[in-house]
Image (cartoon, rainbow, N blue to C red; front, side, top):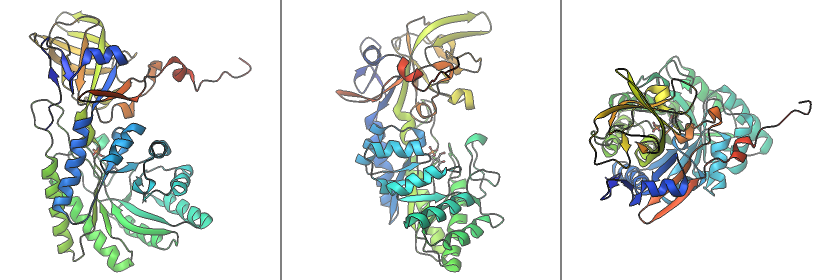
Length: 434
Ligand SMILES: Cc1ncc(COP(=O)(O)O)c(C=O)c1O
């Protein structure tokens, strides 16, 4: 595994050989730094291990974890497909020149415009999530004379052991057609009756931050049984099974990174066994990882703006970012290791809470982490911020989104500029009577 960070002789953190203070001086603070080698290594691991364990495979990166046009180029270079859920994610890929046929469109609330655009550019697969998708695709394909290749999203009724906000495969979910109770089967019947939709596969995604093999095994068996049934009873020409993403990432420095290779080997074997058991040829197998590809590749650097110590209560370090660039702590009290960027050789004998700059007491980045004595203008860095941070960024309090840079040995390039004042005001209008 690539070493994520290093420190130079002065005890300053370096990323792919770049001094973090120099990066901040060049690109400003806060700054999101993405490690190219780490991302490529994960992409190659997914592709290589899947190919080694299963006859026909596809890896589609889940764009919701982190997506910019430059990042699409990197994905394309690594031969990964892309899962998008919105018009904006689709346009990002198209603007990057990403091949539309490598794109798969998801969404529990796709708009007519999302679907229309998906057909217009010719995305590879549309994942049908609900009845409206079927109706709209029937209308759009009839009107344009086009045919779409589709998968059906199924909620297999499996509840993984993860935070309720990121569990998706259980019975009580807004996503997809439920297997239990027969909704999924009834939807297949409706889909195969639409001449413009070619149902090529089935899809499930049971949730995110999953560490156990059990829920995957249960979902795989239920899905392959369903696959066999619709092949036999509905004559649907299904040949693909997309088992979604969701492999967990350890957000602490002491636990080894998630065993991607093991997850793939176990899952592939489960699909092969289930195919044998249900008497079907093994389907083309897709995985859709997001977090496990980018989470550990991201580091967010902040500058301390103020210090508040409340004797016997808490010590606050307030920084120039917060829930606007990383809402993970505010949403799920998610952990991230914190580094005192220029004080790595000093004893970590103070307990600090890292607070964001927004006007919310809940705007915290971490609670009670051990770091050296720090003061205004010092840099702190949160590790493993590559997934579901920048992609969830907001403009609350009209805080600018940070710049994002991609680094590798000897090179640094922007993936996203920092918002300017013009960017922040660009969409504002003043009604004429004011
Ligand atoms: C349909 C779908 N596929 C893949 C993913 C990626 O999950 P993860 O980033 O946990 O791998 C998600 C995440 O929510 C998803 O909704």
